Length: 228
Length: 310
Image (tube, rainbow over all chains, first blue to last red; front, side):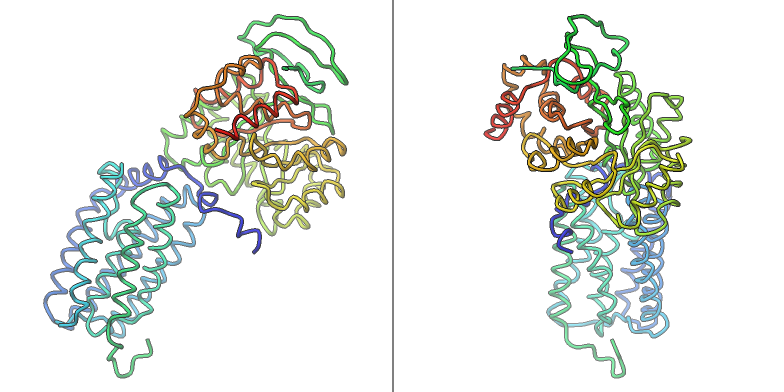
């Protein structure tokens, strides 16, 4: 344990920035045209969230779970694991989140999106904007090409941030267990970008801080029999 | 004052460089002096086998995954390394895809006979299985040197490595650490076991190993591999903002990389430094440090002081 404390963040980085961003490029080439499907899927989630219909909750949860499962297998296992042995463990985290989304959102129907008037509702749409637009734009500004950007539903940072925003928009409040993996990933993703020397690092960190603030702000979950 | 160190030997000349000058004998062993371009080598104390004083590390630089273009670039780095007379390539199962990228390069280059393969065991159990997997990734019949990575489970792995050496499945056994970690334990193992190699961090600013580990390596006749010669690139990025001092010409340094490497390999206990790079130009520059004059102790102290005040 004492030995581990002597390691800097950069000591744990196994690859160069060039290799990391090139991995995104190869990934996007490999999965094309999944990007179009992902954009359609995200738009569908946003539309369903505005319908104020409890029947849409399980659909949204199912679509989010599919995104987390996709990232686990197609990004972490098939692509990221080629340069980072820890990606296998990241995949487990993403599969666990997919399972939690299915259990809480589809099976137990604990993820609904009724209209709300709480002050936090002002914060969470901003998080969604960050999730969908900021990662690719910041990536572009900080040196990634369009073929290397983060995209919701396909890459981990953007998917985790978008999930946080969606969960914070849930009303009644979403089970807090669903926030754990996205928050963990924001820390991991932010730390990776930080170690790479990229200004992108602040995106997941700010998103996680905002989500934590929003989560603490929300009223206790009103589900009468909820164990979450 | 520049010198040829007493334990340096001339293994062979880089074939495309002219050889000249006057050979002489200094101190113990076969030593020589000649003009620049002779390839500097050191003997592995336990066997007498000679290694060029500059090798090739693969940490980060060779972890390029299955990117075909990047793998081919790494193969070109290896080609330049071997063409300059290099032998020792060091990797680890902890370095992501680096082992298989080395294997790709070796296959592409027709598995150069001069290769000295150095890798590590990095697991808490079943070291033999991991070493076999490593050998398969390198695509070589046997590995030359296997080291216990950062002393991980050395109690279990060292007996495995010595047994494999006895079975002639590997030729040398070593241990590694980096960034000054667990030096006390390294010392204990150097005293207690018949190690062939020890790998440590050493550079113009990180000189702790000069106090105990390097003298102990000489006393115990253990070869020394030096990692992080450029502090993972940070050191060379820093010094490059300043001009190379004119007196660097006295030790045949044409670049900061050669300046930093010559400081290291001039220490009599050091067998080989292993800078990592993904650039052909940089590997050629690094290999330039394995020729020409080396600094003596006075000059080495001057070099260290100069870099420290930059």
